[in-house]
Length: 76
View 1 (cartoon, helix red, strand yellow):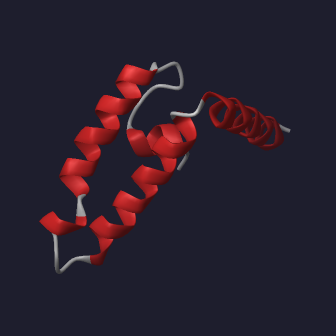
View 2 (view 1 turned 60 degrees about the vertical axis):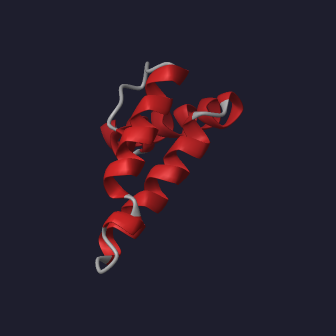
């Protein structure tokens, strides 16, 4: 699963869409809403990590290159 899938957005999504997806998913999966379940805490951490990369232009560009390389490797 890649960061775009984690945030449930398209790779062409703009900053506003990324931010809205992040906020919505964090509200839904916040550990405080599920205190006796470890999965939401793990999911929230993945969401935060994905947003940290995709919301930074330089990190996102590097991540997109990495995804393209992985895609090329799997097609060979």
